[in-house]
Length: 406
Image 1 (tube, helix red, strand yellow):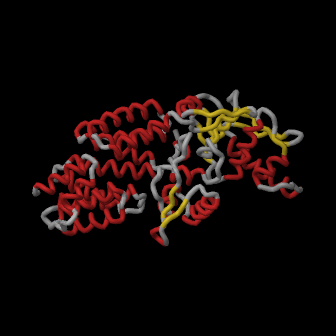
Image 2: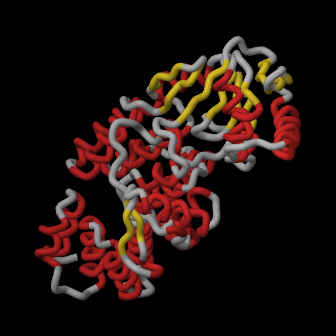
Image 3: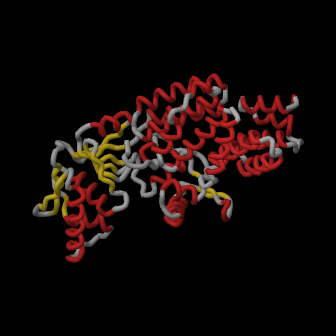
């Protein structure tokens, strides 16, 4: 490569895309196209970045397999940053194999980091962990090491292992300082702030208080019977009963837990579960049917007993019942949690991350837009959604994660 290409590459490695573009902005040879694409990605113009990187990959000859593979990895990074989660991952797998076969272990490792980050975004924590398994971050440059530790910290946060997450972020900080890249430092600082912000509310016996992630970890590790409204599960001592796909049963479980140790009146349960102000005999029959279903689901952990005015939760082994609620009760909290990263998301990417239909996501976004909590820009397939950063609490417990959860 010539001196201008070398200089531009050094500026990009240091996170200075403007200085890089000053040297290659008017050039259309393959190396310059690749570096211009990376520069545009660093400036946030991901559409232009992906187009330039595809052009660069085509411009490199058939004998330049490593250069083409690097372009694919850079395009995958731009796609991930723009939350294009449907980007073809097979191309990234092939590029990683090519880089590894030709001895470019640093970029091959970075491709694995990108795979892990994508898995983490869509809640496939086990696969993200497997993508990082066996990797030696000490053998890669500081910037890549910082990214590795960030991904590892994200996994530990989803697993609710806060001590391990803090340690990973401390290592990421050291690596980012060595790399001298401001955007990396800012991302790490944001992750550190989330560890010291309220993550949930504890509701018990009519009172509530905010909990940090460390406190949530201690609560989950205890023998307390927990109705977890962040993940829509019921848990105790390692036993987890998922109710995310059975919203009526979860609503009843939460209402009974919030009333504990007292009982919950029938009319109140009907109002919460079925969203009705007035209860008639048909709704009472429906309530008995749903309570019977809830009783069967909760059998490993608790009984639901009949009282004179309603129903009461009776845990089998726990001495205490609590509700772990999100920092704010918001029907579309999961969508807001994803948008809180400050990036622009498409409805298809949100649907993929939440494992739901695009129409469901669209209804949530329309509701949030009406409340002025999110905003859209662009039209048609280019339409993207954003939300201002959520200040004052962390969304870690609201992000998608596969069971078993923490």
